[in-house]
Length: 311
Image 1 (cartoon, helix red, strand yellow):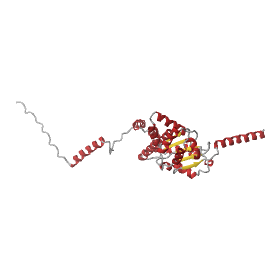
Image 2 (cartoon, one colour):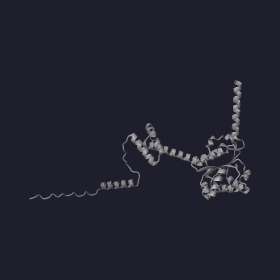
Image 3 (tube, rainbow, N blue to C red):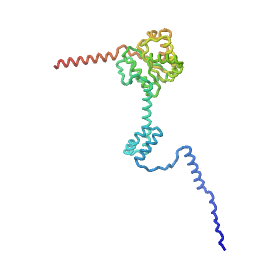
Image 4 (cartoon, rainbow, N blue to C red):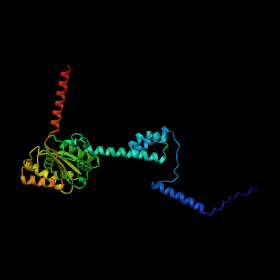
């Protein structure tokens, strides 16, 4: 007689307890936060060698586009270890380095976009050349508050008196503070506007200049404008009236601007708009280039005379 088959009996399921319920809820919460990319508490930290850590940092920085941290993380880590900084302090250091470098690149990009013909800075300007410009006024202009207020700056003076240096210096300071700046000569702007009008793109170009925080218009008065060119330039100036700032430089006094704009009424309208709430700076009539040339020749003469006396 064959033995009867053995029947396996399953143990009854254990009743749910408060502990098991909490564990289940914690697991569900962890899955939810991971899917939602929220910070996860108690993340496991893996042990790796320094070369492996450097490789991981480099790969992550490429994905996150953090070039400064990728380049300097190892050096900052060594310095942080030597100074016995905490992990949080080390993280603050590398993030600050990235932010500082990014800000520097942003300033450089703004300056390059302004298309200055040559580098000029306000701190390199010799204020003794323009006695009518107090240091406090120059510092106030460098701060850029007049740009936020939509006030114009007009530089008047003969050739070689520092107008363009001041114009580029003010534009550079504005660009480095994050403002959108564009340097252009009067003739260059008029030509650009005329070509845009011929291509039926005038409104687009005018709108582009209107979006600038500071157009720097140089060499007003150096060339005579035909009626069409004068009207096109007037559109740019009118678009910024009492709403946005503009900086310009001219070698001619306002009384002679009628020769540039040909139409006296148009010239008067331009002067009226550029001088309303404006900062007017007269750089005088003494060319610093001529003075530098004369000083150089005088110095060379003294050297020759001294050489002759010693021979």
